Amino acid sequence: MEDAPRVLAIDWSGAKSGARRKIWLAEARNGQLVRLENGRNRGEIAEHLLGELELDPRLLVGLDFAFSLPAWYLRARDLTTATELWQLAEREAEAWLEDCEPPFWGRPGRVKPELPSQFRRTDASVRPVGGIRPKSPFQIGGAGAVGTGSLRGMPMLQRLSEAGYRVWPFDRAEPPALVEIYPRLLTDAVVKSNPKARAEYIAARFPELSVRHRSLAASSDDALDAAVSAVVLSREAAGVTTLEAATDPVELLEGRIWCPDGRYATGSVELDGFEAEEEAGALPDLLAALQFAAERHRDQRRKGREASPYINHPIAVARLLAEVGGVSDPVLLQAAILHDTVEDTETTLDELEARFGPEVWRVVEEVTDDKSLPKLERKRLQIEHAPQRSNRAKQLKVADKSSNLLDIAHRPPKNWTPERKQDYFDWAERVVEGCRGVNPALEARFDEVLREARESVADN
Ligand code: ZN
Image (cartoon, rainbow, N blue to C red):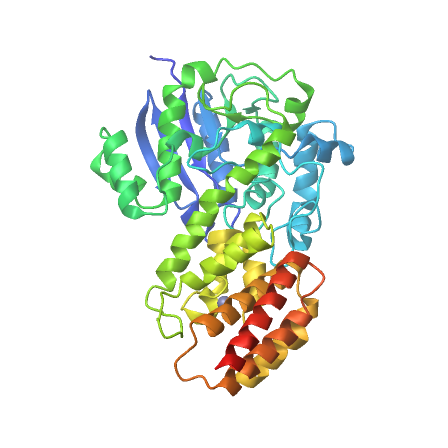
């Protein structure tokens, strides 16, 4: 075991501020964790890795960001190697992050563009863990975005490779070597956002850790990722360090996520198939939104006589979209579930962006009134702004108003006079007027519901 390499795993961060807190470094030897710490920023990590190389070149380092971008992008920019991409990133990455022009996306207001592919082949071939899989390296904002860290990591790859590190799979993985890791594959489906779950996971899977390392590893998801990645990589080191360089031309451009055998999806992966599989991740996302909204609305009731739990309303809106409007767009369905959390609970838009990503954020933002304005002004603005809304927001508005009309018709609020109801119907009709032309089935249902609602008032 004398020549087992030292293993470092770094849980990287592209964050502009707070990188010293977020970037964790773990060291393992012979499968045992010997060091776990944060406190270095990106530049200091690079310096540290250069220093470690001088100290002992039998070093294997795992880094958790994408070492390259999809091959089509490199080809489109006339780049013939990943190294050329790193050099370009050295000069341009900050501008790409600043401008967020396609193919990059994810900053507020920058929706996902149509691209030849969002993913590298390796991102697509990773087995989903708990419904989670690698995100597009072009995504540079929003929950779980990996693009920022990757773009800010590439210049470091260039420096380290010039200093003598081999970067797998562009080079063979004989130490000193860097490999790309995706910690989620190495930790398995632990709920990393939950401190108690982290502590239990560490205690169960890594009982050999010292008390101090155990509590550090459980202290944040970043610390846990670094610690577990170092230990797993170290246990597998004998196999890793004999990996050859890629021969496949796509892999030579895009790189490859290292993971233990069996953690890749089986067989060769078609990217088209992956787009369909990406949809499959929509269900866990939707359930997460549902749980979040139910929790936030837990103390609220609908205005109707029956005072039904508030969450029934967003659920009804999402069902109208799905069942009447034929909507399967996961972003729109999540936004429907979450659409009243900002307006009616303590939830902030930032929170939604962090948890559910920039696309969901944008739709909810569009349908949220500015509560600092007087009520009449808010109602007027809904009518005025409707035509400028995105297609997603327009459909959500139509379903929201339909659900409200149904409630008023069938479960009317106790002290609403017929006049007040009529006023609401007239207003809803005008808002929906500005949302038409996107989803005819949904709009037809609204018309039907409006007629029914008006009749219900006339009958009384
Ligand atoms: Zn609503």
